[in-house]
Length: 113
Length: 112
Image 1 (cartoon, rainbow over the protein chains, first blue to last red):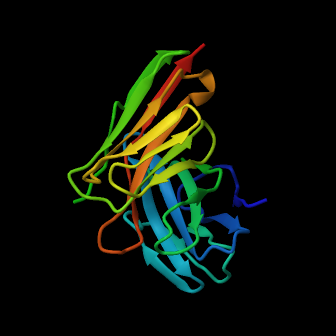
Image 2 (image 1 turned 180 degrees about the vertical axis):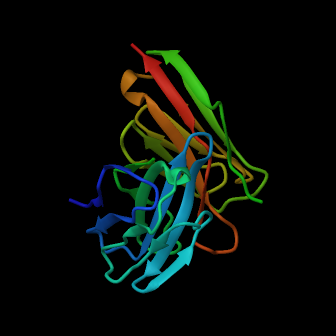
Image 3 (image 1 turned 90 degrees about the horizontal axis):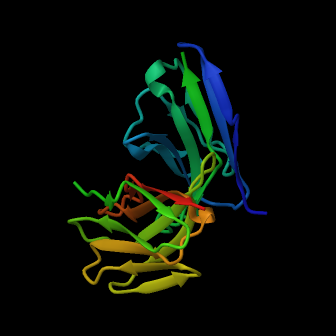
C-alpha cells in the first residue's frame, strides 16, 4: 500500500528542546516537502527536497532544518523550538518536480510551551 | 504575487443541498488541483484539471477549470455528511520552481 508515514502524530514539548519529526514514503518519489498548517494562513511550505542530498527553502524555513540522506526519508528538525512553531505539520511527496499531485502524510500536531 | 482565493471560507448546509466552492486568481495556472482534508488527516487529492474549460466529475462532485485557466470551481450535488471537510485548491507557482500555491481552504459542514 502506497503511503506516507509521520512520527510522532502528537507532540507536546518545551521551548528549546530539540526535536525531530520523521517522514517516510514507500512510493519511490523524488520530491518531498514539509508544510505547516495554521488557521487563517493555510498550508505553507517549510522546506523541500528534489532528491537525495538536494534540499531547499520553502516559504517559511526559519527555525527548521531538514536532511535527505535516503530517498524514502525526509526528517524535519527543530533545533530550538519556540511557541510560534506550534502548528500542524504535514510531510508530502510527489513523483517529481513537474508532477504536482501530492500525497500527504497524516500530520503531526506539535505544541511548544 | 500569485494567490489563490477560495470562497466561501465556511459553508454549513443540510444534507441533500447543492453547493459550489470557488477558487480564483488573477494569474494563469498551468493546472489546478483540488484536495479534501478530513479532521485529523492529511489532504487527499481529488482531481487535477489541466485544460481551460475542462470539466471532470467524481461521483457527485463536478470540477471545472475556467476557460482562461485563472479559476476553478467545485460543485457538489446532494451533499452528504461524508462530504464534510476542508476543501483546498492548489496550483503550481510560475517559473518552474516546482512549488505549489494553496488556497486558504473552504470548510464544509454537512448536517444530517
